[in-house]
Amino acid sequence: MKAKPPILYPDHPMYTDAVDAMRRYHEAQGAGRPADEVERLRLIAESQFQAVTDYQLKALGSPAGQVH
Image (cartoon, rainbow, N blue to C red; front, top):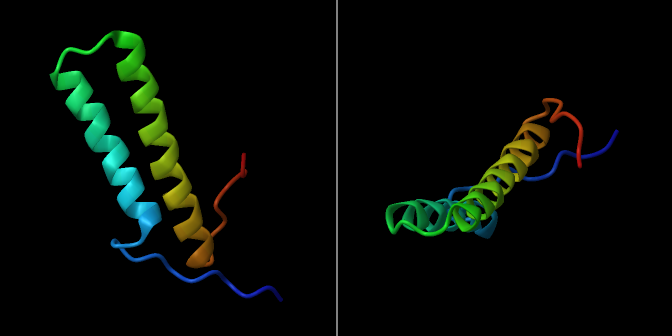
């Protein structure tokens, strides 16, 4: 049986990077940046939050779905 990975806490870089990515996305939205830049930042933020979620689900013993 494989050991579960450790649970991540909110001060972990994986979390803080995702929060920073979301902040950059919202700042670009608010600043009226070009739509393609805003969309790129949204996709980055979404991807980082999905990675955190998948990791946490695996750490808690739940299936995290398909890993890309």
